Each structure stands twice: as C-alpha cells, then as structure tokens.
Image 1 (cartoon, chains in turn cyan, purple):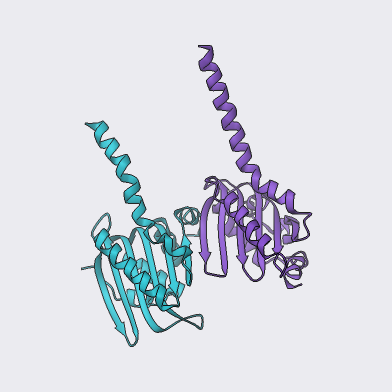
Image 2: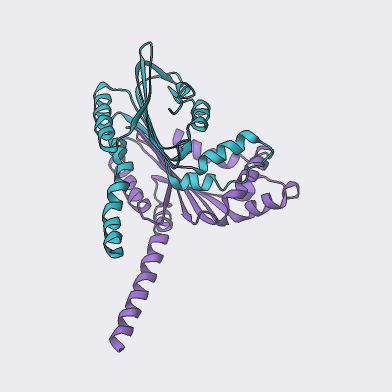
Length: 179
Length: 180
C-alpha cells in the first residue's frame, strides 16, 4: 500500500509542480517583459544577516522566508493582453483560486485571487491581475500586469512589500482582508 | 564479480568526467573567446574595490576575503556580426542551462535580457554569474569568483563598500567598449 502511495506521489508531483510553471511560456512571448525571482533567491536572501534592531527589515526577512517564487509579467500590446487574460482564466478554473478582491479605479481594473495556506491567516498563492490604459511604471505606459506570488505567507506583510516595490495595483492590496 | 567492479569503475569515471566538464565549460568559453576581436575580457581584482581592510569588522573581512576576483567578458554587436551575436548568445545560454547553475533572477523582454545564477550551495557560493544582453548593443557576462562565499556576510560587505572609494577606472574599459 505504501508503495502505491509513493508511486502515485511520484506521478502526481510533476503535475502539481507544473501548475507553478504555467505562466512560464509568457517569458518567450513577444511584447512581454518578465521578472522572475526563484526560490533559490528567496532562500539566499533569507540567510542574510540583518540586525534585529531594524524591525522593518526583520519583517521583510520573515516574509521572504515564506515565499518560494515571484513572477511578474508586463505587457504593452493588446494581443498579448488578450493572451494573458485567456491564460489566467484557464488557470483560475484549473487551480480553484478564490477571488479575494476586485477594484475598479477609473480606467484601471485590479483583481486579486488567492489560495489558502497552512492556516486561515496564511496564503499559499496570490495572483494579481491589473489591466488599464493609464497605468504607469517609471513614466512608461503599460497595459497589463500579471503577478503571482507563491509560498505560505501573511497577506498583510505582502501589501507592505508591494507598496515598497512600486508595483501598480499594490496599493489596493492593503485594503484586502481575508474573510 | 569482476564485471561488477568494471561497471562501477566506468560509472565513477563517467561521473567524474561529466562533473569536470560541466564546471569548466563557462571557463572554457572565456578562454576560447578572450582573444577574439568581437570580445573584450577584463579581470578585476578585489583590490579595485579599494577597501581598507583595517576598517572592516571580522565578518566583513571574511566576506571580502572569500571573493577572488571579478571577471568580465563582453561582446560588442555591430552591423557585421549580428549572426555571430545570436549564435554566441545561444552558446552561453546552453552552457548556463546546466543544472549546476542555480537560477536566482530572470528578467527579459523582446530586446533585453538578464539572468543571475550561482554555483555552489546556499551557504557556500563558489561563483555568481550575471549574464545580460541587449539586442542593439551586445551582451556581457560578469562572473564573481570566490571560495565559499557566504550570503549572510554580504550585507555587511555592501555596507562597507558604500564607504569605500571604489576604483571606477577599472570599469571605464567596459563602458568604453560598448560606446565605440
């Protein structure tokens, strides 16, 4: 019986793992700018010695310890935006992410989805989708932002980080509370 | 019994060979191309950081001493070598695709790309590799070579660097190369 479970686990593992890599094909897509920070990076960063006198830095390190990957895809063209949107709706169906919040701010639409983590205060996956024509990052116009964060973390901590990182839509996250 | 021994011996030799090969390939690429006129190769010793060792704490000193040198290889793209640019870029990508290079950060769009990788374990890094490319300029690889570099000590070293007068003369060669 144990063997059967083990074999099942081995067969299923790559399938579970591949869900996280679902959006990786966007990396090679024309017109998409991507930033991917791997588990290795978060692992290294969490080992950095930070003086405990700085409570803010300590909070970041605590958050980093609980994150396994960060992916951001930014697109400027309509075609890639449509593609990203289609990919996302398929992904949401496949993974049963719950909608956390929707914000409409002028021309900009922000949507947050999440999956519950190890306990009711934690989130194991956060997906943010921002669409709008008036979005600006460092003075440049952008159309769509797709951000996924995986790990086992507290939403409150993330909102602080997204604000610091200047990710559009991030400011809305601080309003988000888990029901 | 004998045949088992032979199989074992071949296996071990095979493993030894493959591990040597994968480690030396980026090094080999450097050596092969540093004389090539499309390339520029610059070795920067850590002394260029101009750190006064007497002002460093024990931890900072340890981190500083774990770094061996910085190694830069650049490819300048012009109107005549764009096909070489593409093929060389693919060569480096295939070298870096080896599993021993652990990916830290990837960035990319149509024209530019950057990737940061490292060799070693998370408490003892042997080499950090930064590979950046820009389809209108060319590409560059920076290797930070060292011995058991420990990430926990590096924040302190960065703080120390902020107070040092880093010798930027050494970097001028690199920026000149891409400006030409």
